[in-house]
Length: 110
Image 1 (cartoon, helix red, strand yellow):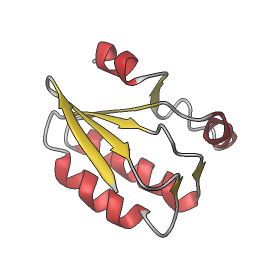
Image 2 (cartoon, helix red, strand yellow):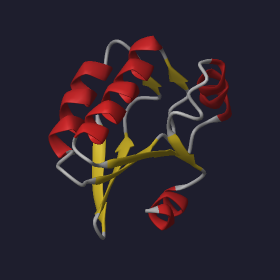
Image 3 (cartoon, helix red, strand yellow):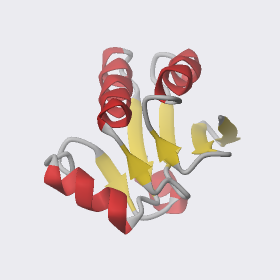
Image 4 (cartoon, one colour):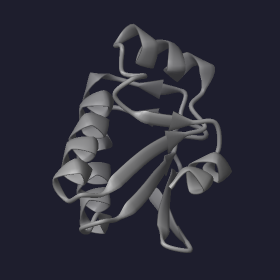
């Protein structure tokens, strides 16, 4: 489901074995990621390889953002495909999430 890598004090989460964040996987992924968010965490969601996100996927991302804000943590997204970015813009979420081009950009921005 997810790969977790710690770079300095930042938790980088990547998605494996699936190119979609949809109703079949989001609840399990959300549960796994919430366990990783502690107070004052720095989290990067690397969306490389994700070519589609449905409404439950966006709901999961918003839920993770809300959970991170409630724990005084920071959540950033990166490596968003052009197809997914179109949906992000359609839903007007580009100003809601901190979106960066790459994992390195995210690491430098903390």
